[in-house]
Image 1: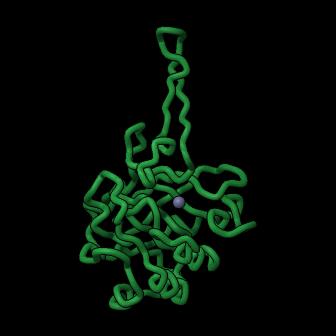
Image 2: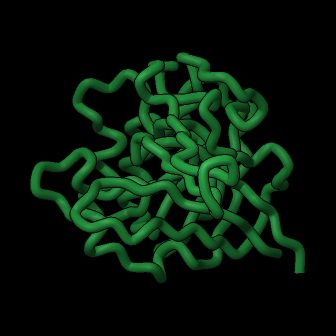
Length: 205
Ligand SMILES: [Zn+2]
């Protein structure tokens, strides 16, 4: 069995959404062997840092938090679809050439996977694409951007998916993953009442 790690590495210098300095993780060494007999550190970061899951509460008032997360949704067969030819938003037309079925978990591979800095013109899932996937009743969708939407003040892409209970994974790294069928493992931390969590995501084949 081959295992492919599709997670971003968390560092103080990693790319963060819109390159906002306050979104960069802070890793602090609280004690080490010069001060005691163990090494302990602390991290402070947004829950939307790197590879992460979004819950409905992120975009829907009183929506479900991580408390309701169903682990079978992200330990699942999945399909990687290649959209590296797309130059802006992935639309319904882009998706419709693939056979997409109820309960599929789709990972959208785009040009984003080939850059490790924040590009404000990153490839995203356009609203018509989100509506199409919601109609197909897929289980989840992941993308290799820190946001699944771009420049949408009404957050239509997120909302179309989250209101149907479709899991969203963001911040995947798919450069070395060929399109095809895999098994996905992506598990959030068990944090009470929150709208998102970092995940370690990997694929097996
Ligand atoms: Zn997010």
